[in-house]
Length: 110
Image 1 (cartoon, rainbow, N blue to C red):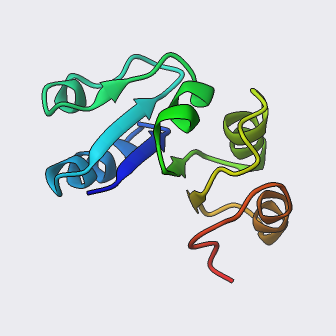
Image 2 (image 1 turned 90 degrees about the vertical axis):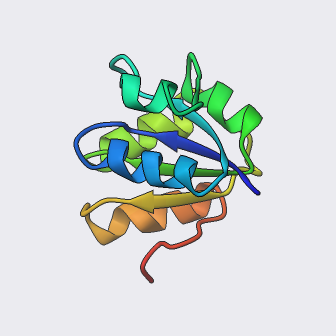
Image 3 (image 1 turned 180 degrees about the vertical axis):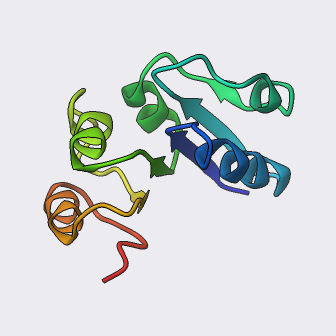
């Protein structure tokens, strides 16, 4: 199974992360708020930062509200340029372009 990182554990992110963990993947999670108990109880590893998620995971999934949040999650802490991300959001197309230029993107919708 894969080592998956998940950043953004709100109303949409938490159920997605639970399903990933339920699929047997190692899961490393981070959010600006406390990690929901439903994830830690299922064996997700709580990380102290987005950078820590990137250091442990093979792929990172983000579920954050908008372009500024994506930029902060992926680039605010100077994550490795080799990170692989799957960005889920309903933010503008220029967000996908900005993300793609800075690290490989899987599932950019383009």
